[in-house]
Image (cartoon, rainbow, N blue to C red):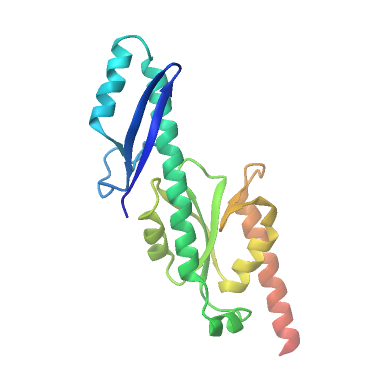
Length: 205
């Protein structure tokens, strides 16, 4: 799970070459978990070299902090995307399930978002929401919060994905920044689909 990255830290004319950053090492604890850079570590010699630049007045502490935070956040976002793509690939239905995907089932459709970023929402499907969030959380550097859920299975999930496709950022993640109440928007769309589904089922029975 752990992965190393080699970067160059540039501060104007000053440059620290071949700095090793590691992602996924020591992510079991909760200490500093709320920090945006949580999950990414940097080699101590590079930190000492950076401190020397700060001491010499070549770099300010604020510049150093901003650079490291931006790097760590970029790495965390990349790894989160990769993890999401892996989960989605594992969840792709088998050929038999594809044929049954149009049938209503009792799986939960859920919406989660990172703590502090309520407009960034993942819409997915699961038999056990708590277990799914736990699985997603293990690969996320930020705490995920359940925002909404309803039974409806793959048909409802697919409908919501289509409804909010213009808001899709990647995979099952959607940007609701311009929406006053994302949860209400999702809930209204879900209820509209479920009402239509119920009416069609009655008509065909």
